[in-house]
Image 1 (tube, rainbow, N blue to C red):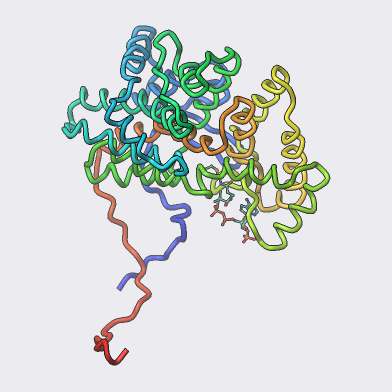
Image 2: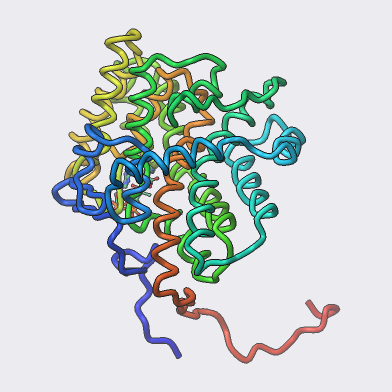
Length: 378
Ligand code: CMC
């Protein structure tokens, strides 16, 4: 008989020892390998930050150049993956397309040399390199267009925006997008990372690890919340409607999307940076009325829910940034996945170092010794 106390959502239960990232939810601090997110957002790039997360240290100039070159070299996707994606229904969600494509990538690399550093490095490079290409390819193909080939003269983020929009992005837009990727790259033991670590613990391949994490990220309580936020801002429609909307939601005990966090009890530091990025974009490319609605929402939610420690999370302002970058709403979560693959791979690598398969227990609350009832007697 089990006597363990059940903690719904495993709240407060450590699932791993990790040195990858750290959150102080009371003070609103996020660090990757000990470096504050604000500093990385100012000084680093997504690929450098990925290197930091995955290999545990900032790369030297030569190490970074080599890593960037390798990622650049592996950006193209196999025509069979492209053809498989072409057969996906265009009405399907791009997260499902991404999950299937990431899993399919594993079909081409069936070796599982998990203790071979070359295999590990190649897998990391391939996943970081091809996931943005897959997201952009599905977007173009579902509109009936051919996918655009990656451009080797463009850096990681500029190339993604180029593949998506079929034109070179403005440098400020590309830099802001790169910062968004850094902000979303890693976040301790969240649901998709836990999912990645559970999958990794079975010693399967990293494509399966990433595919399982993509599936977990897609839900509205996790990465999918950024899409829901835009839907909510559109539904509210004007600053005047914010208060009645929130009051009616809270009366029904419904959650307000983009607010609240298991760990942060203050405003998520990433939300503060994203809000600032949104303002930079509006200054250069024109205002968005939904931003005014968002700011008013933050004010009214603080008035009503700050006693519960509910403030904007990372998903609240990210959608407004992506909208201004011309990204369709249902690509917001795949973009989250493009970034988070760095964190998932860091956890995959860390899990392998001292692996033990995840096999938690449960609190059984069903019956015992029930006699089988014949079908005609039911
Ligand atoms: N709106 C209104 N009330 C909320 C919200 C919210 N967004 N979030 C939490 N609460 C209340 C909740 O009703 C509960 O109140 P009470 O104690 O009176 O019953 C209390 O706060 C604790 O909530 P919980 O659901 O037990 O908290 P949790 O730690 O299980 O869930 C969460 C965390 C992020 C799933 C939740 O805050 C939520 O559903 N937020 C909205 C969805 C969202 O924005 N998700 C993105 C999360 S951040 C990025 C990511 O992980 O992908």
